[in-house]
Amino acid sequence: MRVRHDGAKAPRRPGVWEGHVVGRDAVPGAVVVGAGSAGLAAAAQLRGAGFDVTVLEQGAQPGHRWLNRYDSLRLNTVRAFSGLPGLPIPRSSGTWPRAVEFAEYLSRYAEHHGLRVRTGHTVVCVERGDARTGARWSVVVDGPVGEPLPADVVVVATGWAASPFTPDWPGIASYPRPLVHADAYRRPDSFAGQRVLVVGSGNSGSEIAVELLDTAAEVTISVRTPPLLIPSGRLGAALQYAGSVSWWLPESMKDSATLRTHRSHYADLAAHGLAPPGEGAFSRFRDSYAAPTAERGFAEALRNGRLRVVAAVEGFAGERVLLADGTTVTPDIVVVATGYRPAFVDLVGGLGVLDPSGRPLAWAAPLPGAEGLFLTGEPSLRGDLLAHGIGARRIRRALRGRSVRPTTNDVSIATPRGEGR
Image (cartoon, rainbow, N blue to C red; front, side):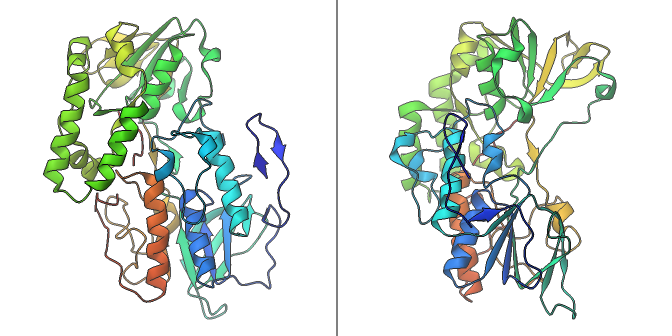
């Protein structure tokens, strides 16, 4: 079902996705895990290549997670770089589409490509197939299916940001005041009159902190790693277009360019408590998949003193939050914007397709000893959504027997996970 901007459910073409049992006599040639952007793009490419595809989604509709984020959320990549292969995002969404508009777009995408999406199905793990089914793989599902689904091709499209992550700080278990992850934040009115500490200066943390300034009594942001800021608005869009044509420059040059952009616009923020970033976007991304922070009012809030920066959180002691510089703060509520973690270890951890850190040995490409299994949803400094479309095409090429260049830790394909600590 599609969701209109007013929140009402709009009519949809029947038979595109349902939350009912997949027929047990129907053995799909391919199973895609996850009906987000990466999963739908992969499913469309597989269907176009002649595969019988079933997409399994734990939520109520394709792209449901985009409907469960804060109301003001917009994409950090321009519309032109955010659509998936075969269907552009409508021009009516503007340069920076809203999250709810992108969720609606994903629903339309599933309909447009005639994808069979089964909602309400949580995949537990992927196992190797057996002689009984004759299929390469078996997808273990918790949902109406009721038994494992055999498939010759499985695409795990849960990406690098599958579930909210909160650090296990000392004392957090006994912290008596409200503490919520940014994933559960919706709108600022419920924080009216409160002293709020936002932990993390990535995209979600910085945007939520700025939004809270209009309702909260006080907003403080805790920064561990100083963010590398990039402009949004018209300048930000222009920079993204410029970056798309200079992508193949040496990494050192691109690192220097991102640092120069930050310094030319935000060097004065050091006087307001925000230290300059220590490395360029590409070096930082390679190590942590941490992306630049799109600046949407954050710098101005620091300059006018409405938003105060404090040191990194080290732990909790009663109602006090302990900071790395030895000081403490006592907020009424803590918003934890420390990002997300992947689900790959749970889903495919026993198949030998991950490195020791839990990263795929290859994104959207053949994996050693695992014919027919693909992991996709890769983060990318070019834009996650652009990379998801590229990844889907790579999978199709691989299944046709055409060569695909490995992308283990390749930052050239590898946007923003969007969070920082």
